[in-house]
Amino acid sequence: MKRYVVQTGDPVLREKCAEVRKFDGELFSLLDDMRETVRAENGAGLAAPQIGVPVRAVVIDVEEGYFELVNPRIVYEKGEQTGPEGCLSVKGKQGEVRRPEKVKAEYRDRNGRKHKLTASGFFARAVCHECDHLDGILYTDKADRIYDLPAEDK
Ligand code: CO
Image (cartoon, rainbow, N blue to C red; front, top):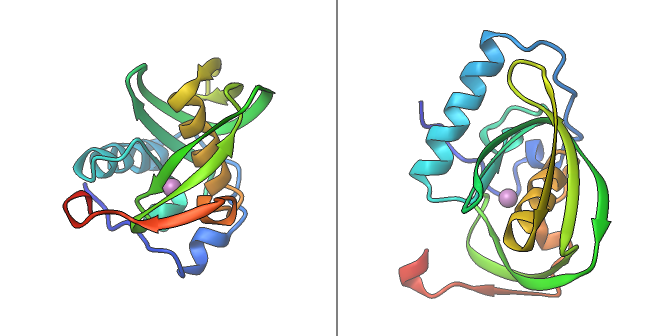
């Protein structure tokens, strides 16, 4: 089910999210709802707190594929990139944000199995952005400059 994406100002976006401990049906429906929501909204990623559930789960939908990261942890960062970033919880705006060029992350899938991924470029940016959500951090906290998007991109 597509869920409502909470907007900046809602305190759930500022929570330090809880680790997922049960890899059960409740987690499956949360992740399924997140997939429907990120696709309906044409997002590159979505974190559980953005649909009002403060647990450590994110989805990322990029060229490299579709990823569900449960309890993700960035374990390695290299280099630097600066580029435009937006967020489904900050509608109509973008900002210039500095991120690592390359990251490695460890995470679990919906069945609790451990995985690692290596991401660079936009994919790395998405991993960093979504992991920040789990600690109550929005890109607007880090952006050098925030600007309104032209109306047709809203
Ligand atoms: Co976001």
